[in-house]
Length: 487
Image (cartoon, helix red, strand yellow):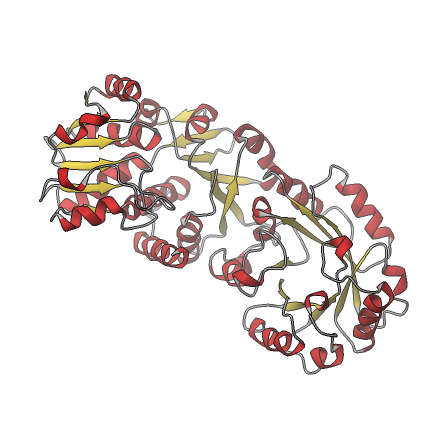
């Protein structure tokens, strides 16, 4: 079930928000502690459009109620007398409810500082308090905290809600249905979240296909740091929906790659996309890689084999080449002169990709030693960063992060040095029209934006995981929608 918290400051607005939530939620949580006027519980519950949880959270548990404890509990008792489907109360106050009539009582525990080690002991304490449902909401300080919360949900012997708060806790909200959490919480809109890291109910349904998630759903996802800007969840989940695949793609904000890959086995993962800064670590993890990926020394895709070993590949390489060929209407890039800006992970993939097509590649990087090392591996030329405008080219390819949001006014190549009619390709996709591409268009240069490469590398991952052709147009539309929403 999806529950939308109602965090309005007036009774009238709370009533209106309940009606809005009815379009997407299974139930709502009336947060009486958010009201800046006395709660009108009878008015709020009268002719309600969907079931409600009535909550009046005190400050000590992270809520806003600062007044008398007796009055706080009295509002919950009134909700019970009026037939509320649920009330949520803290474990140390549940004894004050007295008669519960037909209302189900959620006994909750909140920890805004960490996800403690003694989760099972906390769960036993809540169960012992005698409620119908227990709820444990803790701050996820690292992504592995999600694994312990998800595992807990099915082990308590009673209906259990688990929530990882904060940006690192997002996976626990998305995967609640797979691991048996009684419900998950989704905000009515971004500005009305009741806890940090709470995504919207609309995202749960329309991006993550939450209604379709069950215990058999296969888990894929994005490993990176950061991942909040990524549109990959939109692309992959749209593809699963279009192809009727029982899978979900989840963003994982990972600072410790090794700890993540050890701990994630409890999620029963099937595969991962890998982005900055973990592509080389993923290469070391994989026991099987294809020859091109081995040459590059970095991968962006992992698949878990039946024998529990990891297999990897790099779809960036093919995606970059195909994006440029598609834009040029060319079947080959043989003989083309490519000026490649950047020798990092993306630069390595592009250098190998263009070289494999028979293009003459020249690399410019802000650290010249790195350019020389990559050029020696690939067999191409080097120009110093300060001299990059002196190198002639047919294709200018930016594989640096220069121009990426939020530094949108930066460009890796000066406008006055652009050559009219020559192709300009930027791997940056946020913003879609970078300053480099905007200035290139003004100089009559054909351009390829990073979105095309992003979509094609995602399509390559889909094919690697499912051994079938990816719905490319579905993924492209989803990526565009995601960037539009971000903007």
